Image 1 (spheres, rainbow, N blue to C red):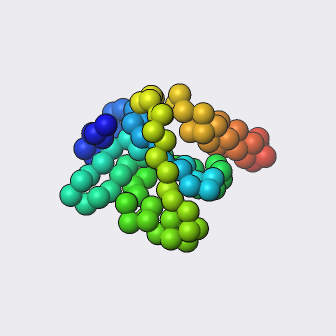
Image 2: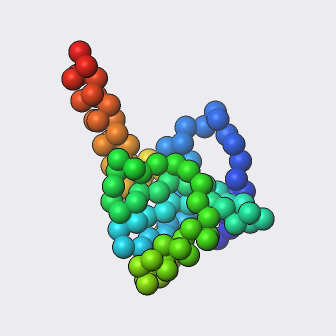
Image 3: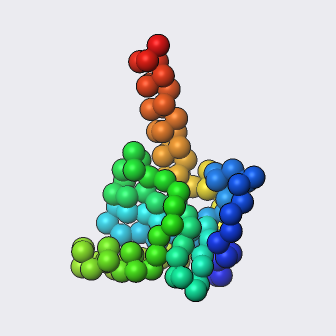
Length: 112
């Protein structure tokens, strides 16, 4: 499956973006939405080591995935059973969004 090229679409909510591929390694998850083949850079959502506080949208490269592999001596695995779906329909992404929303709500309550 070929990923769409990286674009900047500020009118489209991130949670509505389609996640075309999923890679994982030792609790780290990368959900890929777009790709720039010339720079070898992906755009997508990352959940580092099941840490929702540091999860988020951003750019990451094939080289970064290779460095993760080298640190752990394990392979970054592509989920070959993955079917494209909206980001908000991906459990880990939805959980991170819910966690962040609940954290913002708790902070707002503490401030008032």
